[in-house]
Image (cartoon, rainbow, N blue to C red; front, side, top):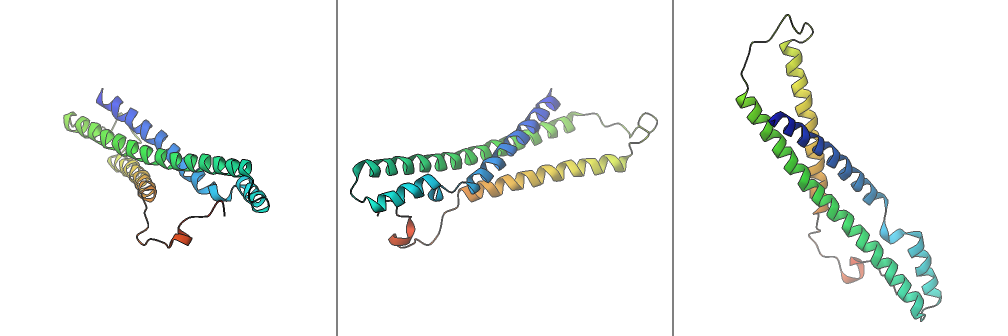
Length: 163
């Protein structure tokens, strides 16, 4: 029962980890301020400065892009927390299974290719892979919480959408 739960938490960890990494890559690739539609509207607005309809379109597009950007950051943050929780639950389940399991001597005749050294190496590789995956997620989590320490001057703090 606990071993199945640990396997389920491990699978959840891999699925959410894949999603978090893909969301992070998608977020890095899509720069909302350099969107071709936004640049085109900005250039068009620079020519027709007083046009209210164009200004409203520009504001709506900018707002929609910013909402999408910050929602993606929130998904990365939530996914990182879920990954951390599932990793903790997986290790707790595995620890309980290990503590409750009867310890038998290493079988020799039933598993001819499986030696104690092979089993130890396999466990080390699995633990190392999970540790690296958790480290990657923690780096993504911490990068989503990144805040600059020095406040930039008002002219440099944000890209001016409508001049």
